[in-house]
Length: 238
Image 1 (cartoon, one colour):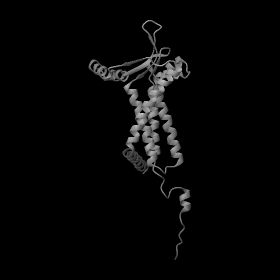
Image 2 (cartoon, rainbow, N blue to C red; image 1 turned 90 degrees about the vertical axis):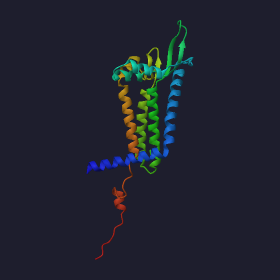
Image 3 (cartoon, rainbow, N blue to C red; image 1 turned 30 degrees about the horizontal axis):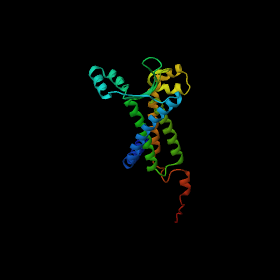
Image 4 (cartoon, helix red, strand yellow; image 1 turned 135 degrees about the horizontal axis):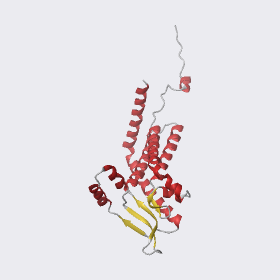
């Protein structure tokens, strides 16, 4: 019976999420796009303010062509996917020409896989907002709890989706560059690099938990001591 009750509640929550998405999918799509645009703008602004210089070069890469080359020349899928995941689309940065041909001091790179992760985060946040609107009468603690879980999850994914590079820390785009820019030691930041995937996974899990939490069905009318106390007492006449 416990398993049946859990299955029934899960089905009800998923149905609520489905109705929210069907009714408010434009809001979810707009939130995903806005999250991606804001992420790009904030990273560029953070780099420019941190180093006191505006970007002076933009480089575009043939991402589709590079992916085709990788697929054709890499027989093992286990090797192919990580290489494709690191392929660049656009690089925007500051080139210091005091050293011959120039050295890229800092750069922001658009990597399609990271862009997809950021857009997915925005879509999940938009879904959470849509579920809140679908459940207008949800309990205050449910709304606050789902907001906290969703905010923490979005922060985890956003942190590990950073694609900034700094010549002092890491010459390739990496999420730990953001940690180094915020004051964490370079060696410590690089030591944390391998856990990025787990942090992102935890973030998506928290976002999913927040959505399902917000979609919880309201308590039955007769549940709880207050509802029991409110029931009228009927007299039995003989």
